[in-house]
Image (cartoon, rainbow, N blue to C red):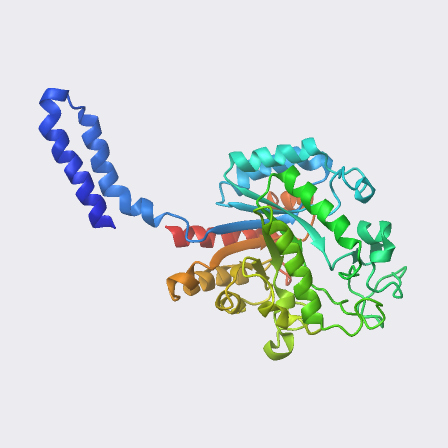
Length: 387
């Protein structure tokens, strides 16, 4: 490729020098071409190693939108972030389903500020609404099941006044029943409106840590294969987006067999959903999160035919190892498989406001790590690969 480029440049130089007496050739053009010739290899090497250099965080509160926009433009973009997954859930003033708005949600005007900032910064903005699982948290039932309790997969399990884990009910988060005949009328309204508001080409549906599925007491799901049920829901969501030229993103934990990998019940599945990996569309993008070690499951997803992104959280050494792991996978794969290792995405599990405050504060590292330092190490490691 370089040889062809050099040949073109030298031919242009030769022609220009022959014509300079008659066309008053500007010598600055000659110098410019020479500079391009000299530095072209450096420019090529500086191209992005990964298609995705991502950042995932909760959408800001209304009073934090301007602060968040400033962070996008002055920190995320200069750090090389080109993809922002924004966990919106019910923090938006839905017009199609106003009953599902959280208190004081983001308005369309607020969202358009974030959209414009991302466009100006060259960042692909992807909204997230947790679907299937994560319909409750601790003592709180989230909006979908609060407003539509009939969608609850396990209505017989009550949210406790004081939540503790573990518990006799195996309650981590509630799920909606994917077999309820009316649930997708609501879900698709949310998806369609949020995609339009964010002017997005992809949607993140969460789909992680689904512990309640095919419950034996559910009149619609009892006796069903959890893998088939999970795959049908992923496929249903993906097909809805694909029909509009959009793409589904999801977390990958429910597609990993925890019993054979010894990964555990959080980063892998112990309720028989893992076989769904062979039943869902290959267009789905897998966000493969591992927070304690750089576990090589991205190779598993890529060899199954999926585009995959490795996701750290708060351990800088894990993020650094994941960056190198993904680069090694790309470099040691066939061209077809190599492109499936899309890159990295830092995950943040605090509010946007608190993350930004911590980001500009002196670093505090404890035995659990630091998500701000993890982010800085991840982006620095990616930039080092691109040098």
